[in-house]
Image 1 (tube, chains in turn cyan, purple):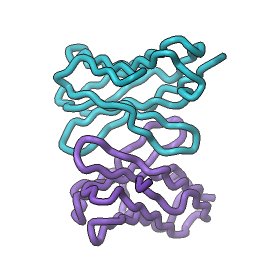
Image 2 (cartoon, rainbow over the protein chains, first blue to last red; image 1 turned 30 degrees about the vertical axis):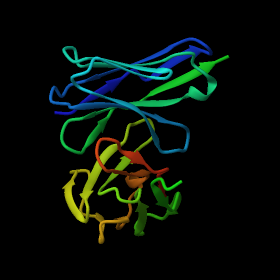
Image 3 (cartoon, rainbow over the protein chains, first blue to last red; image 1 turned 90 degrees about the horizontal axis):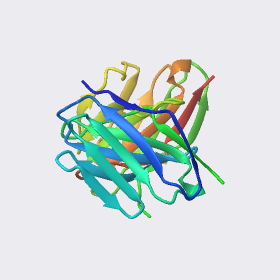
Image 4 (tube, rainbow over the protein chains, first blue to last red; image 1 turned 45 degrees about the vertical axis):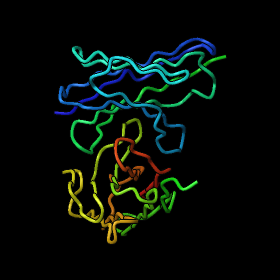
Length: 110
Length: 111
């Protein structure tokens, strides 16, 4: 089955690192994704990782994957006010479909 | 910028009316998806096209919903006899391979 869970809220001080966590249940997931959604907007693809990797870094973003525990995290270094948004974790369990979590609302405070 | 385009961005309708949303995918993307998002939730899969063929429909897509992609380019999502529970953001996405790119969404409010 497909079930992706995320913590609902994260508050972080500007300049600190943010870590957003996600767990998934489908062991056949091939790729895992992180999307960002700002108010009233669509989803912006941030990054994705293949399931046989354990880490991927892209500028301020670092994705860590623990396949054994089915745990995915997104670290944002030097968090800025523009990083305030909802972040969605998604798993790709078959050839085409993504299943999303409920999203983590990140609030960056000055 | 030739990203995924959706129209209209906002639609307010009365219960029982029909509504239609249009999605123009990124050029040459052969895969097109419709998702629905309600407040406080992540997007839920509705249906998927590869070229003009509709290959999967979620059980969320009742018989009041119909989606088409007649020439394998743009797609329409029609909701007949709308109900208040249909109020949501309808998101379209397209892809060529691994990356799904989403449009800005069409927000439906049913009064």
